[in-house]
Image (cartoon, rainbow, N blue to C red):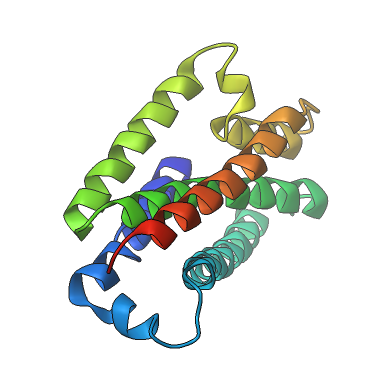
Length: 179
C-alpha cells in the first residue's frame, strides 16, 4: 500500500505546476491578483484534499472488509495509521510539487520527482537516518495497529517540517521564475 500510494502521489502531482507553465495557463492565471505562493498553496491543498478523501474511502473499505473476514479493528490505532500514512504521502506530494516548480515540462518534473523518491528511499534504508524520515511513519502506524507502541515522533516532526520546507522553497523558486 505504501509504495502504491507514494507512486500515486508522484504521478498525480508531477505536472501540477510544470504542465500549467508549459501550456501558458499559469501565466494567464497569475495576471489576476493571485500571488504565486497562493497558486502553489492551492495546488498543494487540492492534492492534499484529494489524497485525504481517497485515503478515507480506502480506509473505510479496508476496515469493513477486515470486519467481515476477521474482526473489527480498533478505531484509534487504525485512524493513527491512516493519519501517519497521509503525512508520508503529503511529503512526497510536496517534493513532487517542488520538482514540478523547478521543471519546464511534465516529463522533467516526473524525472526529478522520481530521483527524489529514490534518494529519500535510499536514505530511509539507512539504519540511523531512516528513523527520522517519512518512511518510518509507515512502520510506526503498523506497530500501533498491532498493539506495539513504537513511537517515531521525530520522524513525524521532520516529515511535517519537510513539507513546509518544500513548499517554501517551491514558493521562492516560483516567485523568481519568468512565465
